[in-house]
Image (cartoon, rainbow, N blue to C red; front, side, top):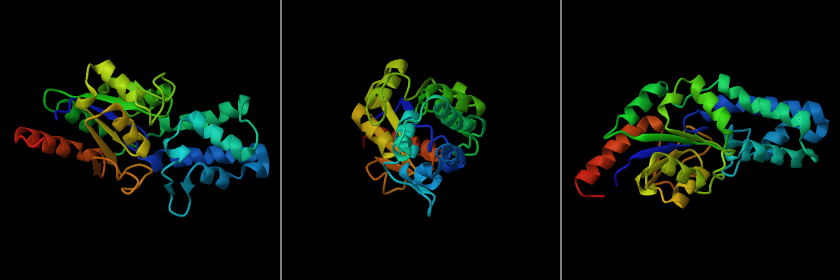
Length: 246
């Protein structure tokens, strides 16, 4: 196979998940507890969202770890027993926007890594597909001074469907003039990997900088410590192709 594009998840892949998101989620849960009282116990809100407090890890089906903002609010509405709407909804969504100012990248020098990836071979197209909102994703990438390195960014509200559906990956291919069989999908959750498989991507790669374990990512073609290991993987793939092994 010849990889010509890489489509990244954002949270847990480009972003160190717990360092970026755990504090805002706790603040949002505390706000709802103050707003609704005992019906919105903050620990219960986090637990129902998939957070395992004892280990500070996340269930594979966690809405907080791999769902959309709307999906998180829907989950919490069920816990509260009432719709979270109006000013209360806007306040909760504001907590979800806080990480744009406190982005914690998954690798120390994200910009240098992305430059290296863009320059790999004949030049790779890079994209981001996130369950966050597109505008917030672009703010976060801009705050980290890496937005310019991406040819494509979409979110759960961009009109391409949501993970694990194939729409986001197909939109990346269409925008960059690529076939799915030329694309590697990189993410930290089973939904990221399923999106890649559903789109017919050449390779699905799990990374361990997010909310999920290697066991959770067992269906990936490869599992890496972080995206810092991608250049080595690309060199391996190219060597195998040149040797006629793929």
